Length: 221
Image 1: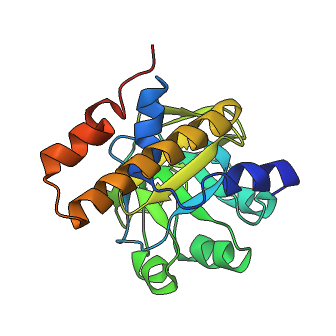
Image 2: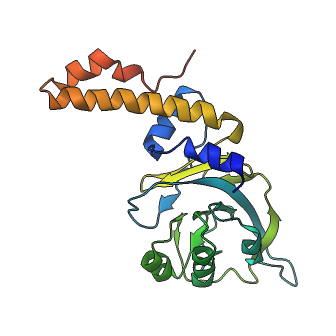
Image 3: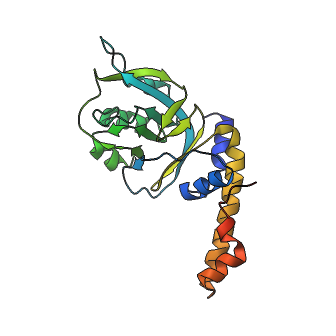
């Protein structure tokens, strides 16, 4: 990651996908990746710039499937658009191994992965539509890297900020990253004050009313 990448990612420290999602709603921005689920109940939040990959059905002879990993920087999140296909995979144990060695942040796939034992054993963060054992070799091929892609109905451009955890994946447009992070932190401060009031014996209704809970995620006019 370059310096700007690092600065933008640092803005999301202490946040999670629910908070970022609420901020996106408040700002009227899409970005939640529907149907993309974590492979495990990860205890940490991954934040990193998107390295996007677009797959298409294979030609004859078939083209490359995974060599793009040589170009991914440490801390990047690999975001793969395989058109939601669940009949063949685009990720396996060798790619997991190599990604771990290169300190890649995570992988997000609109599609499926395999060799999940390796990812689970290494605690490598994976977010997909599921798992399936059939190879994608000679079935799909890379059509482009760092091009706009679609992941669970969310548009993802190269270097957008990806936030992923046990709840799922949210993609923040790079040009709005500062606005989203600021709104998310503001929401989190208010929600923490609600927690504090509950700990002091207030009712849930009182705490929410006092701190305007019901308008926290409401779209700004």
